[in-house]
Image 1 (cartoon, one colour):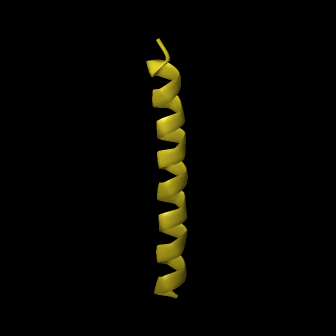
Image 2 (cartoon, rainbow, N blue to C red; image 1 turned 60 degrees about the vertical axis):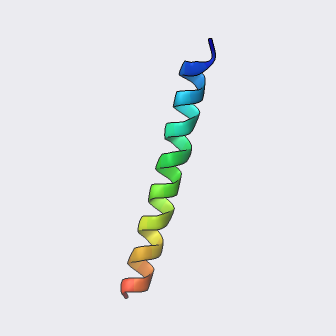
Length: 30
């Protein structure tokens, strides 16, 4: 099964999205 690899890729992309959103929020708060 590729569920493990898919889950890893999903969490990595989700982490990148969270980091990008957090950076956008920091910039907008300045």
